[in-house]
Image 1 (tube, rainbow, N blue to C red):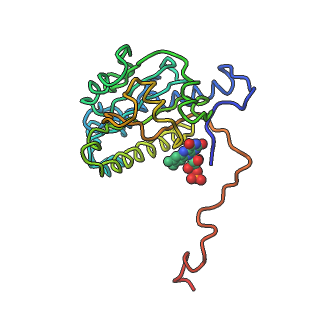
Image 2: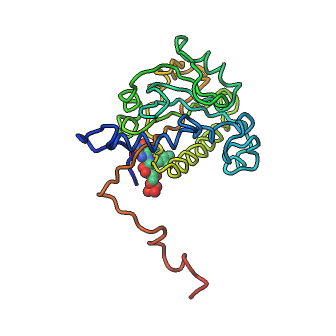
Image 3: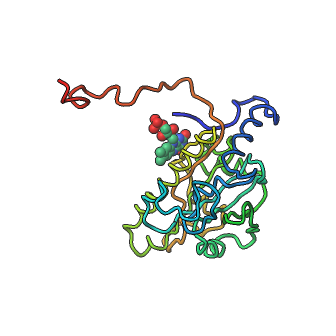
Length: 256
Ligand SMILES: Cc1cc2nc3c(=O)[nH]c(=O)nc-3n(C[C@H](O)[C@H](O)[C@H](O)COP(=O)(O)O)c2cc1C
């Protein structure tokens, strides 16, 4: 287990210190030419501009997206805290272009929806603000959502579930794929990430201006949260080799 965050409490956070390292790492993570191409990885295969191996014009057949047969229905509401090239604030990354307008109509009417980043990315700034407190609160008051580079909620297009309840699990599978890619991308960029399963979905919806939960149909539902940043190892935890406690009979029955 690992914790994500900036410095331990009380540590200095000048640009040359821990914060500087986090910002530098995050630049690699989220940026292309110092902007935000890392997010390309999470875009729909058919609307990603050719630029990197991860995001060639045709990512059909490129893992892990080749394992996912459906059009994207999970989009990202991002709390940007420390990312070079992006002002701190609330952003939405739309992974399927047709979802942008529906999301815009479903959320607060006074959001900016300011297009940010490379032209090929549907990344929009809703508001510029220090949202570290909000991100922490939404994430069951967990500091990892505020102390890293960014945190996000995965906003699932819930309309199909209202019609066909069994599609609920499909949305979770999609969140899982997005989460795994986030883990890998963070590691590749030299930072770390943590899935956040403990979050207040109603608070997230309220923040965005989405309709509150209740008896009526809900068009969007935050299903899974995530954060990325510099790692702070917890010395109280031990890491053991995988399967170290597996019974011999289950490990290698043929070698007896
Ligand atoms: C679905 C899911 C939800 C998680 N939720 C949280 C969370 O709310 N807070 C947290 O600190 N870590 C959370 N984690 C991270 C785990 O605590 C743990 O760091 C991660 O699974 C790696 O540890 P492991 O190798 O022992 O599984 C979550 C992980 C997953 C997969």
